[in-house]
Image (cartoon, rainbow, N blue to C red):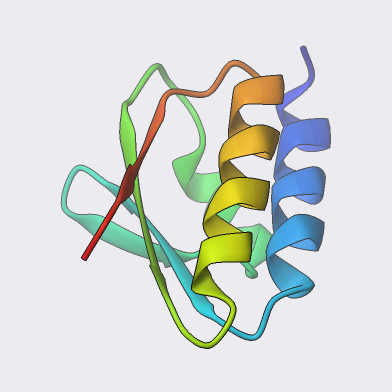
Length: 80
């Protein structure tokens, strides 16, 4: 699996939503609409937490979960 493909797809998926979508990896918080932020974070076998807030948060959570799963990335969508 190419991490680059995952990063582009995650960023593109996030950009379709108005909600704020933030990935937490260890103590870092990254806006998943930022490809650069993802490049520096989405390495190694971390487990990630995804925080989604906004008007279309439910749809965004479902879409983001699907993209992360497709690329075998371990993400926990946090329900606030």
